[in-house]
Image 1 (cartoon, rainbow, N blue to C red):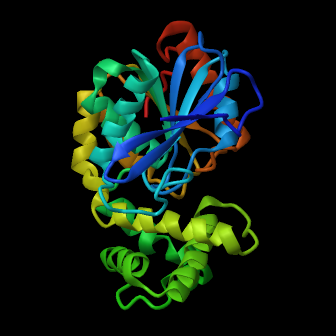
Image 2 (cartoon, rainbow, N blue to C red; image 1 turned 90 degrees about the vertical axis):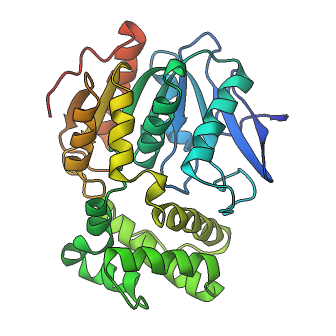
Length: 325
């Protein structure tokens, strides 16, 4: 292990390091905030994305939390970036537990958004004794219905973005798109990977309700290609969970204080699927966030997350959020 200064936050309470995971994988982790604060594990989305400095600051600022974040296998500053070998949900779950032992943390509040919420549930189901609570924003459920919506179902709402994204796919059904994307990012020519990456970015921006951003290039484009290689790899295997696996995970975490936050205008992750998991997790709470979609930085979502973090710090529960789905 190599200890590094955390570049995300300018504070004496911040540090980072690299942890060997075996099979050539190395995890980049960050530890921010006072050591006496409530330990919070912040899991990034994707699959394939990386830790967010803004989300770390948001979580660390709520009630003086100690926030631990890391880049998942093949993501961000973890190495080798974009590598899919020995990279499954089970590997990521074990990586989280290895980091907990490495940092000497007994229990932590596990926070995740989108795919990060999915991974949080999978981890809590495997290691419930290590989890003091679950805060799950915009849960992604790797179900057939969710993939059908993301890969084609939403096309009539954004026809130009879909046409650009799906151009070149022989089969534009959801299963066909997932197979094609996995092949493009594992075996396709670099020029094809670049074109599909630009299309995928525009498609995500359209569904997320954010204005189209300038086209990425250089290192940013290379990072996006690696991100989608990981994401296509996971989606091709239904994240090794599927809908049933996540429902079972929810059922096994019923004793853990859990709050589901979901933007009422979320067009990326289906609320109906997340509600099914909430209901399987007996005793969990559900809270709609009015005005928000899937964007974690929407003011309404930021306020809801901050309130939930403070509530858990004060009560070791989410007793202020008890709104039925």
